[in-house]
Length: 370
Ligand SMILES: [Fe+2]
Image 1 (cartoon, protein in one colour):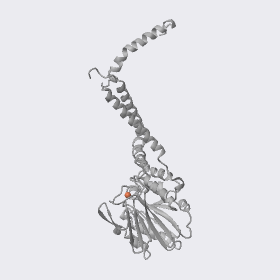
Image 2 (cartoon, rainbow, N blue to C red):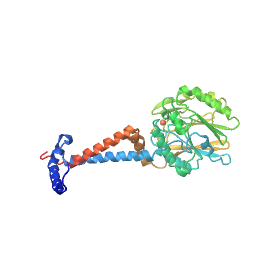
Image 3 (cartoon, protein in one colour):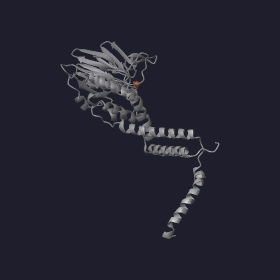
Image 4 (cartoon, rainbow, N blue to C red):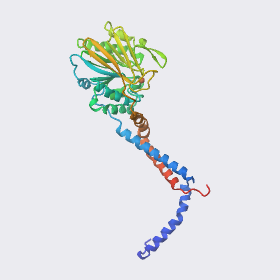
């Protein structure tokens, strides 16, 4: 139907009048029937909606900014990271040992800054990089490590029981390299093994025997790095018989026991000399501490000609506050809200619906006497 141009203003006025007259019916109609609420309730709904939007935005930013993809140069069991270690000075070198960063990689980050300031040439982690074996957890650890900047030192790690899914270690390998690893530095042979499952004792023994033979003549001392200690110790009030699960060490090394056995698993600190072997258990790198007098710490080891010295170094100050915020956002909230395309879509749709409903309630007049 064509409308003469001379009639257009009159038609427009009429249409506006009709729409204005129909508006209350449309708002109150069945399609948009909303409950009448007190203004305070409507304002509270709007505040909740804004909080949800803020959480969505913060989680999205955390997922974008606080995660890194592997491999990260300098971090992990790789030959190029061994080559990056500073050469020993007069046959001496220093390295840092820390364990079980788990849900507070910010603590490990702070300790690694301290290690660099103390002159450590490299760092060794005794396992349990993350609280759970998931890509986002490892990626968040990588971000913490990448933020070390000039204080980053080559860092190697044993695999912990939290870093694998049953016998599946593929994710750990993608982020940190092989869990069976060795290198020689300053005539010390470092051996990394996966001792988490007692059923793997034979494989540990076989690996160590093989590496000792393969590097014969290249080393004078040995350092075994693994997750579960090979000494008896108290954990949460219970005696753990590490000497039983670690009995393979004596068989593997034969008449020349390791000089150092570095382990974690217990979120605390134990130092014990057993014959020629010094056992250092350090799990104070970020996980929840498991003893009454434990504290976050690392160990500095000085390898000197004919001597090995160790000292514990506590974390300077309190665990970084930012860790309390970034971990829940990047590691917990982000995968929950945006971990898959379907979750991202659901998050956006639900957030939009919540905000729309809250805004409509806010604009809805309160019922008379209601
Ligand atoms: Fe742990």
